[in-house]
Image (cartoon, rainbow, N blue to C red):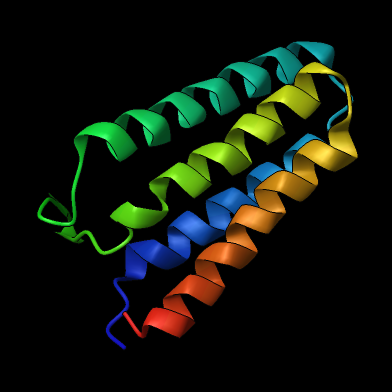
Length: 109
């Protein structure tokens, strides 16, 4: 398995996002997080429709067929945070991280 170092940064950032959602007490930051989750949802959905495994993002993309699932996780995280359900929102982001790690192991990429 050849893992690009930025993958670890991506995983760490998403773990940080889950922790931030869970621990944050600032309503203005909640608004920023809702917008960020909405943008992430939109980005994953857009790339699910327009992207492919033929593209390169620093390294060859191998996760294209999972973008719709990522979009779903982030949509539910967005929706839950919008409803002030921080634990569920953070759990959706954490589930996305766990899925990403499992997917990496199972596909051996």
